[in-house]
Length: 219
Ligand code: DX5
Ligand code: ZN
Picture 1 (cartoon, rainbow, N blue to C red):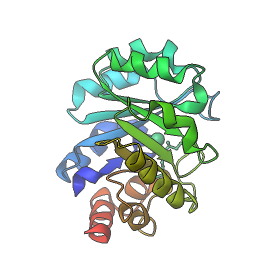
Picture 2 (picture 1 turned 45 degrees about the horizontal axis):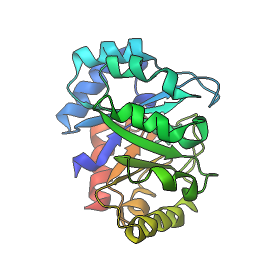
Picture 3 (picture 1 turned 60 degrees about the horizontal axis):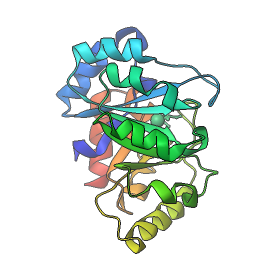
Picture 4 (picture 1 turned 120 degrees about the horizontal axis):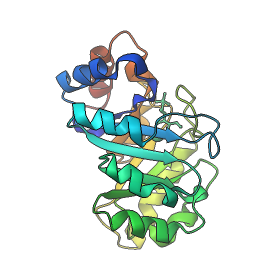
C-alpha cells in the first residue's frame, strides 16, 4: 500500500529535506516525486539537477522527476546525470513529444508523459505505447495545495478505456494534485496505483499520521 503513495517534496521542508526523507523511509515510502518548475511553463521555480544530484547522494528512493519546463529535451542529459529514475515531460511543453520521449528512453530510465487538466488524452495517443507512465494532472501545475479537479476522474476512466481498446498493457497511470483524505479513494477506486501527494503529507500534523490516514482510507 505504501508503494502507491508518491510524496511530492514540493511541500517538504526545503531547509531540511534529509530529515523529511528519513521520516518517509521510516514509514516505508519507496519513491518520491520531484517537481521541477522553470518559471516559464509554470509560474514557479523549484529544483534543478544540482540539488537533485545532492539529494541522490543521501537517498536510495526511486526519484520520480516531473519536469514542468518548456522544451525539456534540452535538459534531459543533465537530469539523467543527476541520478533520477524517471523523467516525465508535459505533452504541452514539447514541440516534438515523440522525439523527447525516445530520447529519454535511450538513457535507460523510465519515462512518462504528463497532461494538464485542459489537455485531451487524444494529445497523448501517439506516445501511449512507448511511455512507462501517463501522468494525469488533477490540478493546473505550478503549486502545491490546490483543489482537486473532479472532472479529471472521468478523464482517467476514458484513458483506461483507450488503453484497453488499443490493447496497451502494463502502463502506470499516475495522478498529481489535490490528493488528500477526501479525494484519494476517488482515484484509487478507478485503478490508479501511483498517487502523488504533497501538502497533505507534509503540512499536516505529522508525516506519519498523514500517511497512515491515506493508507487506511484505501485499504
Ligand atoms: C503541482 C505539482 C504537484 C504538487 C502536488 O504542480 O506537480 O506534484 O506538489 O501537491 P498537492 O498534493 O499539495 O496538490
Ligand atoms: Zn508533480
